[in-house]
Structures are given as C-alpha cells and as structure tokens.
Image 1 (tube, one colour):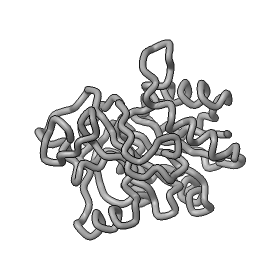
Image 2 (image 1 turned 45 degrees about the horizontal axis):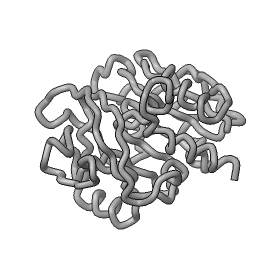
Image 3 (image 1 turned 120 degrees about the horizontal axis):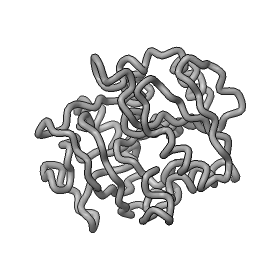
Length: 233
C-alpha cells in the first residue's frame, strides 16, 4: 500500500500516522507538504490531526483551500481512498468531500480522553477488519468534534449506511444525549462518516494511537489492516 500523509502548517499528528501506517503495511508513507499537488502513484491519502493554520477562522477552513486539496479532490473523484482523522475530518467537511460540519464540543471544553466506538458500516475499506456492532477503544483530543448536519442529511447517511463509527459505551450501548457515551454531543452519536462511494472516511478519535503493542493496546490496528488488505486484494 502506497500512502501519502498531508502536512499543513499546524499539523502535529503526522508522526503518529507514519508509525501506524509503517508498522502495519511495512511501507513508509510519503510526506506531502500542503503546497504540493502531485499524488501520483498513491493508493491512500491521509489528512492527520493537529491544528492546521492554528484553527483560525474555523477548524479546517483555511486548510481546505490549500493547493494540495485540489489534488486531493481530483484523487477522490478518480476513486482514490482518503482518510481524515480529527483535524483531517474537519478539513474534509470544509472541503465538502464529506457532508456535515464539526462544531464546538458540548460543554465548550477541549476533550482529551479515551472513548469507545461502535462499528456501524463494516463494508468499507476502512472498516472491513471489524464486524458490525464491534466496539473498540480510541483516544480523542479535540475541541471541535461535535458532528452536525441537517436532519435530511443525517437521515440520508443512516439510510445509505454511511455512518462508519458511533460513540458508545464499553459494551456498545448508544445514548446520543448521554455525555458519558457521546462526550462531544455529536448528532446521533456520529463519530465518523463515509462518502457516497465509501472511499473517503473521516472520524474524530485517533485509532493511529493504539496500534503499537510496545506502547499498549492495539484497538486501532483493524482500520489500518483493513486498508492494507484492500490494496492487496
């Protein structure tokens, strides 16, 4: 699997993503500075977490207009796979590659804690390593992770099976109004969504931080193994 990781001014999670992708795939990803536009030969483009452009204006709003995002859009339109995590998810919504928006967390507090995610759509390149209903743990670190969209958009995401991940309790219980289960207050407890062709995925928590057995649990490995298996198949 040949992957590229986009770095904007203020990105700070690219090293975590390099470690996760290299550890699972065996291939070191390409680092793509935000002014580049050449994505030739890549199977996967990753937009990692951080605070692109200092989160001025809105999280991800300025990065969405960086030169490389034109190339990412063309890559996605040609059927390329794109993963956005945390700030990367925010950028994908601002660039309209994914529907909805990420607002300030409920309670207006930055959240740095573990959460549990439930697999809702196991039929994508990002989730095929799980079964529907599986639950895994992932760290979250964001101030603007409250996913929202118009009711008709939420209904369409539900109907088309494009909700990839939902916040839940440790045994899979989903309570959208309960901050213990849905810490940032996201609509319908949505933690991650897919594009119409299911090749673009965004999520707020950080599965890349739970992939190295030397550092602890490996709950995030299935996402990256899923991608590797997709490109081997």
